[in-house]
Length: 230
Ligand SMILES: Nc1nc2c(ncn2[C@@H]2O[C@H](COP(=O)(O)OP(=O)(O)OP(=O)(O)O)[C@@H](O)[C@H]2O)c(=O)[nH]1
Ligand SMILES: C[C@H](OP(=O)(O)O)C(=O)O
Image (cartoon, rainbow, N blue to C red; front, side):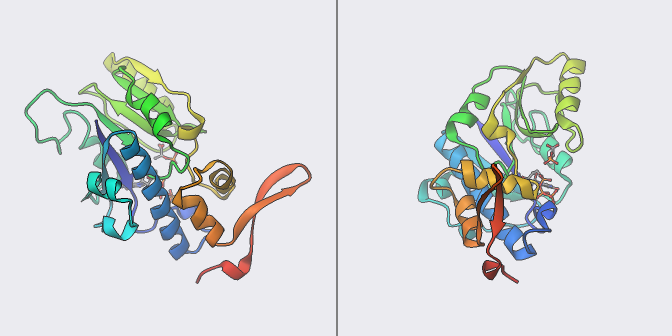
């Protein structure tokens, strides 16, 4: 299946600005992107990164099999427009054949595994959504040619309503790993606790000096400030 991975390449993860410098946010966002691309490829699919700016995938130092399967295209339109152009029947579609299903997997799903993705990607519903905590749309598969996304805010609820309006069947995929996107400082705990052992994102955070901190029976994250970059 075609898997689109949207990526804000220029100033990613601004909501982490209280804990990471711009250079660290850029490195961390790229580490999560590399992990997501690997999970997609290990699930047997070929990801296309839709990046807000030209992006050299070689700079991500992806494992060979991942580098061979992944591609990148630059599109400076806002997220919703860039994704809609690539859905079945969208204006970036070049095929005249029956529109093929398209998956959209966000680049900040640092806990994504091939198994979790496969549960979503094998859904036969017209629209399958893995919602985020809150009401985001962390990943989805679209088979219905009239379905269009509208991201931000309560996008999961909005997408359910859109599916109802166009008469599309909708499956909600309940997955802790796909529901956990990394937006805010509190989410960094999840990356360290639940990130796959071989993933780049937890290693990146540890390199920056982050570690778990257990106090009063609660798990938090602390930083050794000697590791902070400019
Ligand atoms: N192609 C494209 N991808 C985007 C755009 N905005 C966000 N993304 C990607 O969409 C996904 C979800 O976006 P957010 O969670 O808002 O990520 P972000 O923009 O890096 O983070 P914030 O600056 O904190 O909002 C991530 O994979 C982003 O890299 C955009 O305008 N175009
Ligand atoms: C793109 C947006 O992501 P969030 O702002 O929820 O991380 C959404 O899922 O609608």
